[in-house]
Amino acid sequence: MEQRAWRFSDDRGQVAAAAAAPPIRVLAYIQAGATLEDLGIRPVAVFGSFHDGPLPDPAKSGALPLDDVGYLGAGGDLTAEALLAVAPDLVVAVSYGGGQVYGLDAEVAKQLEERVPVVVLDVGQARTAARIRARFSDLARSLGAPAEDVTALNTAESRLRAAAGRAPAPRVLALSPAGPDEVHLARPGAWPDLRDLVRHGVALIEPEEGPGTNWLTASWRAAAALRPGLVLMDIRSNAAPLEVVRADASWRALEAGARIVAWNPEPPGSAAAHAAFFERVAGALEEPRGTA
Image (cartoon, rainbow, N blue to C red):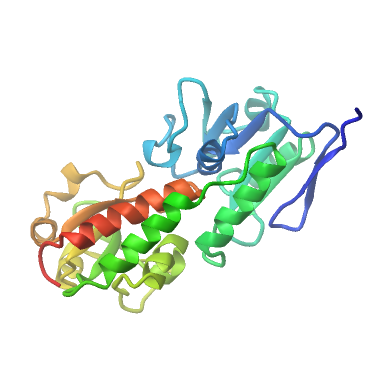
């Protein structure tokens, strides 16, 4: 039986095509690769962004078996030759709007597209978490994966709504540690997963107006003054580690008055990953500590 050509229209409106159906050697940005792994498509290799280092970020890699899936490096260290060395027949990248390939130099991205089909999916603030999940699911199904099971996500959403509705409801602050003196406070509207928390009734704190579309950079004292009862803390490797920020007395006061929940601002765009995040937040809301 003759195989039909594989085609997929990405979020730039561009059609990626392959002569065979479907491609099987997928190279992906690490967040996209972790998503595809959750959906039943294992990439042959992944790469990081300019925020990443020579080793894969455990927060972004999700359930990827990194002993089997190669990590090719990140950002400015990446060349088209290094990426093409794994002989991909499809590259899956992400964008934060405007269609630009995130994590690669524009010239490297251009050279890739001249040699291999490239699919770019938008994970930026213009997209809802549901839309991100749907687009990755569409891609995975086109590559031969079964339909995504959303049972755990539905259960987690129900638990989250119930937990968010309990009184007293703690105020929730999402942040990324910048160092011993500074912290980036997330603007909830800029992050699809945080918008989902708000949609389910979680009381996220909106930082004051100021520079920064996604974050407001402030002191730890300013963060502690917001008196959150629950803190969603960025656990990516580019965030300052706890042993650094614990040198600040305001962080220690904040930590003493709030539950701390791990938050990955670049989660896999899968129902399984979003369900796990909602379950963590719901568990913290069910047993609040500190001020409400």
